[in-house]
Image (cartoon, rainbow, N blue to C red; front, side, top):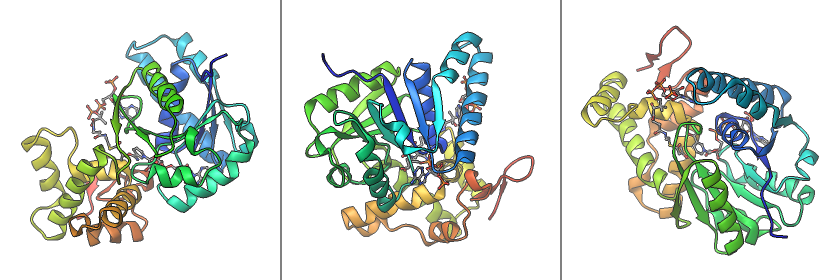
Length: 293
Ligand SMILES: CC(=O)CC(=O)SCCNC(=O)CCNC(=O)[C@H](O)C(C)(C)COP(=O)(O)OP(=O)(O)OC[C@H]1O[C@@H](n2cnc3c(N)ncnc32)[C@H](O)[C@@H]1OP(=O)(O)O
Ligand SMILES: NC(=O)C1=CN([C@@H]2O[C@H](COP(=O)(O)OP(=O)(O)OC[C@H]3O[C@@H](n4cnc5c(N)ncnc54)[C@H](OP(=O)(O)O)[C@@H]3O)[C@@H](O)[C@H]2O)C=CC1
């Protein structure tokens, strides 16, 4: 019988992992949501619950559908619970050594035919695939943030990704109601190759004193009709993730135009990672966000 994806495992219950779990469960997949800490899983499940409640209140679906979807998500801190999934999507932090470590831990538990995907924002799919026991069943499935809202998913094949993996991934993305765009395996793929240098330039604009946080974001929201200003978006993505993507672009393309702005490095060194740590270019600890510069 042809291989079919029915159960999906997700590694990392952060903002991307919980968003991916959300859309998979609504599309009828059984979901195993894995993270290192049970507290992380609890908070991921609480976010899904809140986001689904908002969507249900808007009439996108009924209470029964919401309840059924939530019931399809099983949170666990045990890697062994991924043993019977057909597709694993890794959505842990954007650090190559951490992703490699996760793959070496998880692969021995997986069925030989299971597909292994990464939600990496920037790292070479071919290189990550080569660190696993299944480069032909490895692929980049790159969701956009916030996952329940954003329409696009980038699909990225590594050099060894076989056609069946690619076709099953396309069908999976379509069943989620999303649209895929196929990217070659180059640093940061398409969306982030274009978006992150723009965000980095906004940070340079701040660093050089051309404008304040508020002025830069207002300029791009009202002057270019972006839904969020670039500094607001950087905080939303996570400044650690933004810096990692710029580093991959800088090293991978060896062009100084991708040099991460020193101010971005400083914020990350301070542990000011944006919304997820309550402080970045804005301070989120009060009633409304206040610029930090
Ligand atoms: C880094 C990478 O590797 C790749 C990336 O993802 S790059 C980032 C790509 N994402 C973007 O560029 C997002 C840009 N921002 C936006 O599109 C919009 O600001 C936004 C959709 C996030 C919010 O829209 P908004 O109009 O400002 O706010 P709001 O009215 O509160 O929200 C719109 C909808 O999004 C939902 N929403 C907002 N944030 C959400 C979240 N984190 N999770 C789930 N749903 C969310 C709201 O519930 C609302 O839903 P309805 O339309 O059903 O009412
Ligand atoms: N943020 C964005 O806009 C987008 C991000 N991505 C990509 O998605 C991935 C996740 O990003 P995002 O969700 O924002 O990051 P978050 O920091 O929100 O979440 C990452 C999660 O992974 C967990 N984690 C870390 N190490 C492990 C491990 N060994 N095993 C299991 N879980 C682990 C973290 O736990 P802890 O905090 O305890 O370390 C955390 O819960 C990254 O590769 C990123 O580049 C892709 C598209 C958009």
